[in-house]
Image 1 (tube, rainbow, N blue to C red):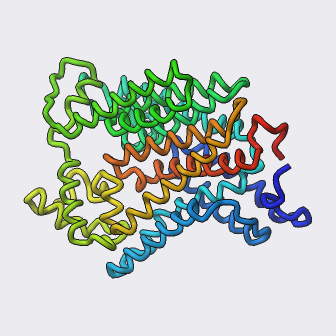
Image 2: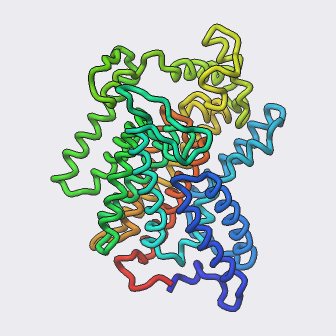
Image 3: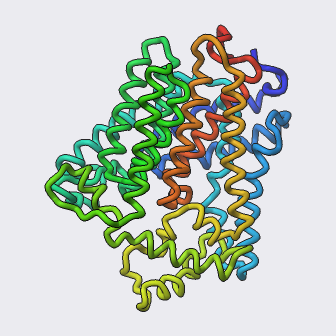
Length: 437
């Protein structure tokens, strides 16, 4: 049985019915997470409405320290302040576009009565299919699931950048990147029939990130594996950690150096690495972003106020802005930390870092609590922390937090991490209990 502070009053039937529907939409959220933003949006919207009903009726006690949940409120509040400080135009759009930020706390309600293995299995099936689909795209460039595309643009040696059912390969890499440690750690902690399937999901998601030819995704993947190396036995952790550090440092140096020139004679992967820095538009965007920060250091230009970036884009490129230019304004500055500073000022950046730091610190506390036999919640703590670290590293080269599909997966990982920490700290991990009701 769950502790009393987790359970609605036994005499109140309405919250139980609402929670049953929340369970259903949690399944749909996890199912759609790897291929459909429309399915994700619908699921999140329904979870929010139902969560409000549960809270209204049962008023559950708070179980989380303030430093975990306060940055989520603070980041949204700072976004509103930044928009109002810059005239208030587009306030509704700015807030609406980031409404997923509270998803981790809505998930705490249904997760307490759900079978986590079954939930991960529901998430695994479409993720496996999308990973295989990405590998097919890498080889043949087909885009069967999107009406407006038929053949993807070819890159080195006539291969293609895998993008799954998403618009770009960066989104695909950002989502699949987080699936690798989540499924990998579930496989490591699992002792039942799903272990092999979770392992297959981790391996195929890994290959999908590689097939995306996203260098920032490769860096994030290396960082995630580096975190996982801390959990593995020494015979595995040392080579994995060493390889991850080499991958991160090597790619990082290449991305900034711009000294290599693609030879066209190697593999698609080596040619993609050699191509780094050759007229990379990120350098232009970063310079423009830094100019914006120097002009608006404290409150920024306003959340989602991309039009304010036009003068800085023109100043860096030395030519008038053309809406047909690549990348579009909505692409931002391709560095989520600089982008947050541009949008919401230094205060917004600090709150954003506190949000991630709070969740990771919470995960670390839960990991220190777990000892002994295999436990799925412990695996989700490790996998969730690794996924988030990988996404943070990828964020140095992408605006991944403002990418709807990637943001949804980030919030899912945060929700699993926060919930697993609650479970293990209350002694309810799957390795120490008989049933979940």
